[in-house]
Image (tube, rainbow, N blue to C red; front, side, top):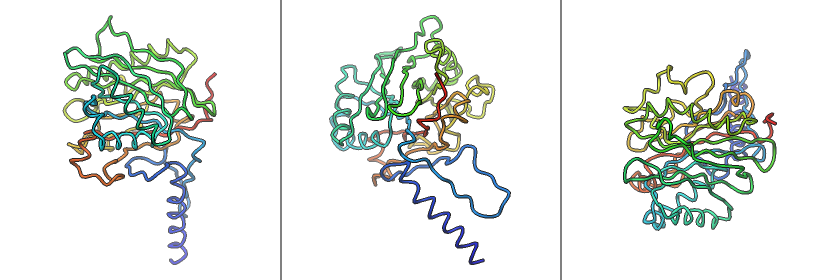
Amino acid sequence: MVSIFRTVLLAVIVFFLALPEVFSGEMTFQGQFTYPPPTTNHTEAVVIRLPHEKDIIRIATFNIQEFDKAKSDTRDVINVLAEIITRFDIVALQGISDASGIAIRRLEYVVDALLKDYGFIIGPCLGRTSSKERFAFMYKTETISVEEHYTFDDTSHDHFHREPLIAQFKTQSGSFDFVLITIHTEPDNATREINALPVAVKDAQSRFPEEKDFIVLGDLNADCKYFDEDDETSPLKSPEYEWLITNDMDTYLPVPSCTYDRIIVTSHMVTEDYAGKSGVFRFERAFGLSLNKAKNVSDHYPVFSVFYVNMDTDP
């Protein structure tokens, strides 16, 4: 009995000592550690060996909720946003309501002041009403370079209230290149827009014919009263796609049981590029914020997935 206890205790210690190699800083999150989970026919403890920091990148998505000039001028809020962004190599941002571009430039300035050099690309003001929204990608220039970007042309079908922003990126080291497709669906139209997202994926595939790695990410409103997350008939639930942010990962502060924010990859990435770790960054726990102060930052949590930089076999 003592021997078994020592073995289990050693495995736990090894696991937690390995965590800082993957996540710089203290990360408080919920999510999966391996995909698929390890299996064994033996009774001894399984030790999960996590990849080294230099071998992975972290891709995240975050709805920063009505981010305008006034919000960007609130020191406590923008400091927390900047700290969150530096936890990841690239973050897809939704909820930018500033047409001038001042707010996103302020955010980049505060991020860079943390001794992390980040760049960004930002899309146009979108929306069918007077309330417009912009999408952006903010990325760590030391690890990521942007190749090309565009906004999906939806004029022929009008699937989306706010058309997806699409961009191709490449890691500065290793072989991993990939296309990100980000969107914030209109809540009352979420099911229709989610089901139409494969159209945007196919458009990106035609734009980048040699690319095989496509990632849909954003605030999809993919749960609760807006979308039936268990509906396997959705085109985005076909075998071509894998949902890395799963239904048990809660992403919305006001209603903890709702998983609105998602990261969805083309399925072959699971066995080639995906490092087996996805989760929700609970920033109020990481930074010791009250729920009210956390909601001043955003009513959404950022969600993330981890990918290898040197497993990609694309041309």
